[in-house]
Length: 103
Image (cartoon, rainbow, N blue to C red; front, side, top):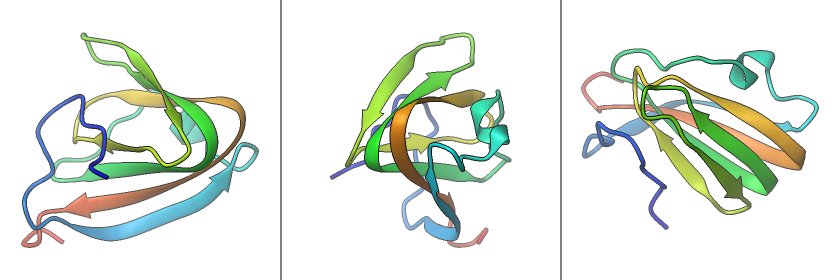
């Protein structure tokens, strides 16, 4: 299933994961992910919900949020501020991706 993509730029063709963090449960999600943050230039995140649900918030001028459930993957582009909000029991994992030439 394709990741949910609500903001651009899209993941470059041929992009590859260069680092994966998690899995994290509700009590082990790093504090930095719960506050406003961005990804560096050339990095995209693939937030995967393995179990439960979590609310993903866009902190840019367009705003908005989405409840992500087990099986969902959200594409997070570089430089777009965002944060996570715990919603009970959840397990997540994040893969950081870059264009093959940048990895």
